[in-house]
Image (cartoon, rainbow, N blue to C red; front, side, top):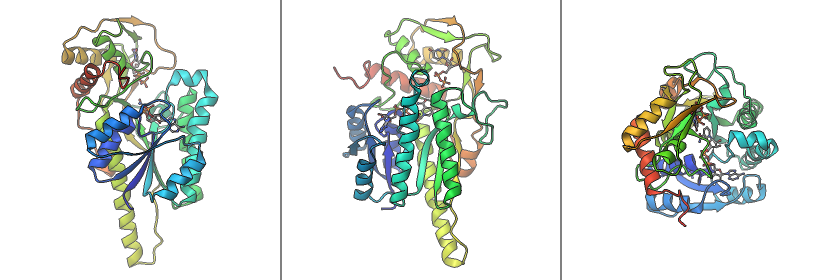
Length: 357
Ligand code: NAD
Ligand code: UDP
C-alpha cells in the first residue's frame, strides 16, 4: 500500500492532530504508542472525529519484536516518528531515561525499517537544536548546539539520520524542526493534556484563565525584546499537522518523478537523503503579547508576576519558514488569536484533559 503510514507516538498531542490531517489527506494510518504520556481516550476521540476505528498498537518503539510484527503485518510507505519524551527539566534529572527512550528507541525503529526496506521517515525534531541562535530568523543552515539532554537527544538523532543517509542513498529522512506548537483541534475534542503543573507557557496560561492555577510566573522581563519578555514562534498544532502531510506529499511526488526519470533514461534513481525543514510561522510573539491575546479571547483576567529568568531559556527564537514554503508548498495559516481561541475551547470543554473521572 503506497499511502500507509506508521505513526509512532500517534496518541500524543501533535501525533493525534496529525492522524486527523493524514486521514483527511487520504493516508491510511497505524498508530503505535506505549501510552507513557497519553491515553487511549485520545485515540478514541480521533476515531470518532474521523468516523472510523483507528488501527492502534500499544507498544514501545524499543520492542523490536513487536515492531517487526507490525511491519510484517502492514506494507508501509513510511513512518512519522513522534514517539519520544519531551520535558526538558525531567531530561536534566533523568538523562539516561531520555537517551534510552529517544535515541535507542529511534535506533530500534530505524533497524526494523531497514529490515523491511521501509526507508521513508519524517522525524519530530525541534528548534531546540539551534540552541541560542546568532541570527534571526533561524534558517535550516544555522549552527546547531544543545545544552540539555532532551535537546541533545534530538540533535543526536539528527546526526544518526545524517550518517544513515551517507551510508545508504536509498533513505529519505526528513526531520521537521518544530518551533512552539500550541492550540487544539477546533472541535475541542483533542488537545494538549500535560501531566501535573504545565511547564510550557500556553497550557499554563489556559489553566490560569480557567481558575485551576492562580497566577502565571513570567520568567524574565529584562530580555532584549519588544517588552522585555521572551519571544517565541508559536504555531497552531493543526498547521503543524498539515506540515507533516505536506512533507509526505512532497516525498511521494518526488519519488514518483524519480521513477519516471528512471524509466526514460539510464540515470540512477536518487533519494532525498537528509532534508531538515523548519515548521514555524516566521513571526515572533512575546510572552506578554500572548498573555494579552489569551485574556482578550477568553475574556478572563490572567494574573501574572515577573520572576527571574528560567535557566537555559533564550531571549528570542523564530523561524525562517521559507524552505517549507518553497519546497513543501506549506505555510502556517492560523493566527495567535486562533491559537488562543482553540486552546481556550479545549480547556473549557476538558478541564481535566482526557481524565474523565
Ligand atoms: P507527547 O508526549 O504528547 O507525544 C509523544 C507520544 O509518544 C506520547 O503519546 C507517548 O506516549 C509516546 N511515546 C513516548 N515514548 C515512547 C516509546 N518509547 N514508545 C512508544 N511510544 C512512546 O508529545 P508531543 O508534544 O506530541 O511531541 C511529539 C514529538 O514532537 C516528540 O518527539 C517531541 O519531542 C517533539 N517536539 C514537541 C514539541 C512540543 O512543544 N510539543 C516541540 C518540538 C518537538
Ligand atoms: N514561560 C514563562 N512562564 C511559564 C512558562 C514559560 O514565562 O510558566 C516563558 C519561557 O520563559 C519562554 C516562553 O514562555 O520565554 C516559552 O516557553 P515554553 O516552555 O512554552 O517553550 P520553550 O520555548 O521554552 O520550548
